[in-house]
Image (cartoon, rainbow, N blue to C red; front, side):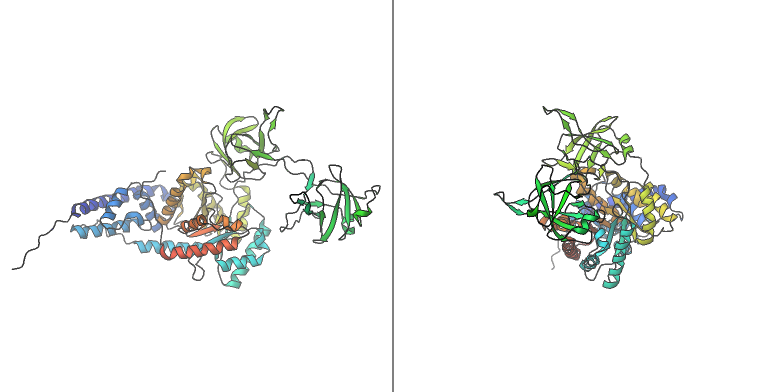
Length: 626
């Protein structure tokens, strides 16, 4: 007689039933919340219909109102897929889990409507299609999209463009803050020509300059140039000092950093290699410039065997040999006029800096003979009217976050800042460096006058336009309106996200735009502490990725990935780790640099390998903290 097996009670039965009840309740709450949240955007959609992406994003935002870490842990312990992969299709993921649990617990649950048909694969396909439409297809077998910032060199260096395309550049970025339409036209012409030659496509993104808030001009020292020679430890000269004498100061070649001094044409015509120019320097010492060679029809390379201090407009004597010098020889020529170097303004932590209107020239601090501060260092702000918006306690960042400060006082002269962040030894302030006021409402229009002018060119030649910064839906509406005026309403927009306010309003920007206009997001953080607590940055980046995946919107990572390689050619483990993390975005942006070809080669290699086993992105399980 067969022995009956004792039926063991399922220890997970009650747990699974409880999870099922929670998921059903969660689904109902999400649908109610979605209906309510989408109502405020109805005015933006004249057809009255929201896209699948808009619905899914609204579902995702509703889902993220809850902290479901405990639910996630219970699902994982029961061997059931988590909600951590729900971004691309929220309701379909919930319906799949509910159906699975209904079968497992023998509860014949039937939703009021059919299970959501927009499944996970459909959501992923929609995201992939949007990426291809916006950023182009992958090149060959490389699973990587790389955007490279192109400078003025790309307008004349066609070989650079060819090599970048061959290495894997799929998008080119032109920053409208630099150069002009003539240079931009040259860059775009070279890119289009290279596309034809290589058979590789390359999208062109032009980024608007925005409101240029920069440090003003700095007062100049006396017009004296120090010609430096190189000496060994024993004080013996081992290399002469060099400079360039020119009749054309405006068209300086980019391949040299030598100081250029103007001379008059009558002297220029008489110069020849081997000749000497005698002069008395600023320290009353006899010195000679030796004519080495002609660099061009306008420039002569000259050298000096001894250290010298050249004064603007110094008298010169033309000699065939320095040994034939006759001190009674009349000086028949003169150097042209040149400016002195800007005064050095170096600031350390706890120093004071007065931020003034732009018409005041910057100067270093003044101290008494006993070391007492008489006048703090000061520098102008190119957009002077923003000074009236500042309040005590507001943070200010200068030169891309190299110098941090807080407003300590407001007076008739400007805003007195206390330096809070500066590297050991201090920071030297230069003119034309960025000034950022992350917590100040500046009251500026979304687009500057320059932006409106540049848009005419952008609409004609670019494949997509990038805002200088997008913080609100109203700013997005303004840009879409300007594109429509130029009959370019189909030109895709890349919204640059780089401030705390922009992150907070990102759901609003996405819901008010997707389905109306082709959109991408640029995740751009230059210095984390400028805009938020640096420790929160990784979490914020995760949230941006999750939001955009739910909205089926492509993301461009512009967080200075491979910066050390591009600028210095230095490879390191942190650089490659950053590449692997950034590869979760749909495209990575590289800044320009002397080693950009090496940087793109490394980046494409990493991205291709990562994408072989990483599909999609991962989100947090906590409720949003915005």
